[in-house]
Amino acid sequence: MNGGYGVDNDLRQEVDASVMNLQSSMSRTVTLLFATACGMSVANIYFAQPLLDQLSNEFNIDHSTIGVVITITQIFYGLGLLLLVPLGDLLNQRRLIIGQMLLSTTALVVVSTASFSVVLFTGIALVGLLAVVTQTLVAFAATMASPTERGRVVGIVTSGIVIGILLARTFAGLLTDLTGWRSVYLVSAALTLVMICIFLKVLPKVEREVNSLPYHQLIKSVFALFMQERTLRIRSVLAMLIFADFSILWTPLVLPLSAQPLALSHSVIGTFGLVGVAGALAAAQAGKLADRGYGQRTTGIALVLLLISWLFINYLEQSLLALIVGIVLLDFAVQAVHVTNQTMILPLRTEARSRLTAGYMMFYSIGSAGGSIASTQMYAHFGWGGVCFLGASISTITLIFWATTKRLTKY
Image (cartoon, rainbow, N blue to C red; front, side, top):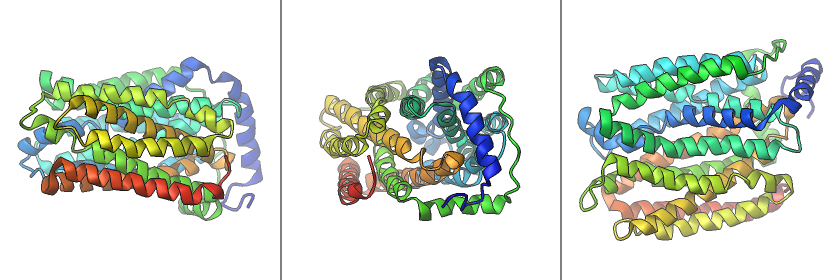
């Protein structure tokens, strides 16, 4: 299968040489900077979740369909994964990262100034499309890290992503209560500009020759990787299912918390994201376990905890403490499996890490989009109990899928 998807030997040797030069430069400070940038970028597509009631009122969109805002973001995030992330295997990753972040700044301004729903949807779509810079950053970090530390680096960087998703709710809730929902996107645009200035000084200037592989063949090769790599197929399905569960909890959560009898403010609702960070941080070391050959064991334990989490989440209306316990368990489980997944797939093809990441994350996006729209529909028709039943069902399916496929891959 060597070179079967369009990367010639000369380019492969050049990539390997670049890796040798970069492996000693991935300091903890740079790793944390990558994690911060990833968290900031991915947060942009989750700001709307705690703002759904505000957007519903301002743009006159019914509660049963307001989840389409999240779905649009995830759909275009998926398109970006397919159309933009693979370019990281061909183009200068430094320029690609900075260019996408500049365009993201423009998209954030469009959302913050939207006066009509069509402008809002257009801006949200662009935000989702360009947020895939996070995956270019993950692939670049994996290339910079040495093989012995790759699991640790990927664990820290991807933890930044999950923490960004969770803190997006806290950030959005606080700013909304203080200065309105539009300020959320304006402040994010300003912070993105600051990060661009930092990256202009920090990101290594690694020059690579542009491959002659046509763009359509590059995109086609993403699908070829699925045909060739069983581990990628299995771990991508797991990603789709766990992030569907993740969205099933977090997308409609603002609706029962802001409604009677709880009637919590957006600031208070946003603090539940801080609770989730504890679970995500606890799971950051899952990459190390995968490096040591315990990836399957870590996955199994995490998926059992994912199922158990819904038993606690179901008691939201009776006990906020039970909800907090459930959130910690769910976010720990999702992050542990996600880090393990990436640690297992990125070494499969060192010269195609961006395409491996793109293919894997497309399934993540499908799961997130499906979970968002399904959960708001369930809440509209069956209340919070229906949401929890859906989440527990997906958790059960995920556990069964892992149990039937765990012997088909290593680790």
